[in-house]
Image (cartoon, rainbow, N blue to C red; front, side, top):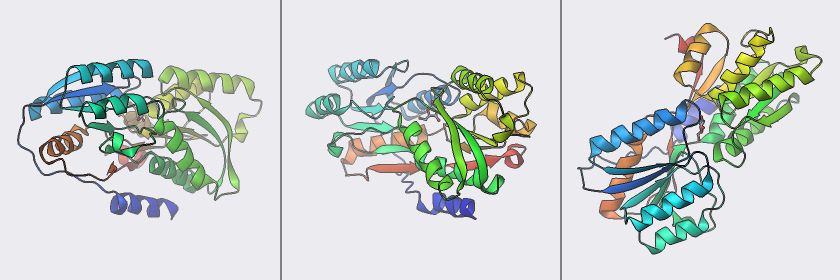
Length: 310
Ligand code: AHR
């Protein structure tokens, strides 16, 4: 019931604005990417590079290897190079005011993509183009509520501390499970969005827990941490997907296979082929400078073992 409502809301409520087709312009765009953690992010990087080629964009790509200070340097380098626009996928939400003021003073519009920034002056960026992480957390929570009939002790693997998807997925998930008195998070820790991180956290949890039978589900903020947790659980002789309900976010190919095998149960898809939504918005803005809504939402879909087999 809750799940149906949320999925309906995702489709009906998503303000997906796809700008009309834009003719190729000779533009230079700087793209500051978080890094290459997990399977989802490199897939998105490749998509951004491929789509830039198709659009005839000169893309200056900077991989920050998960460090905010590298992203600050990259943005300042883009400003010095006088790029036409900057796309920023920020590692964490805070710490952007000053550098975005510098971009604004240089007359370079900044677009955030995927993750969000928390800045006082919202005019420092044109718009954010991304999925709704809070909704993803809600979909995961609603799936688990339905699958466990509202009774579940949960292990949560959080993403990078301070990152928009970690903050919002947690909030959305908690908003749903708080409606069920017998659902509670009994252990929560960051696995930094990586397979190794998820594996380590789960190994430590298994070692330090006497009665694993009390645990009913694992919610991981991304698939890679869940894949790591699954490895740890199997190595300890446990049966994830059978004795433990496993739900995560991204729906990367390795998770699709894992769902089909039955080692996990659900994953909320975070689309990675989103350059086709992002560039038309940027190019259109460079042409007409028309004000845009502050958030252009890309829909998220829930997948289970049943849909993974298709
Ligand atoms: O910002 C989106 C998140 O970042 C993805 O869910 C995760 O896999 C990535 O690291």
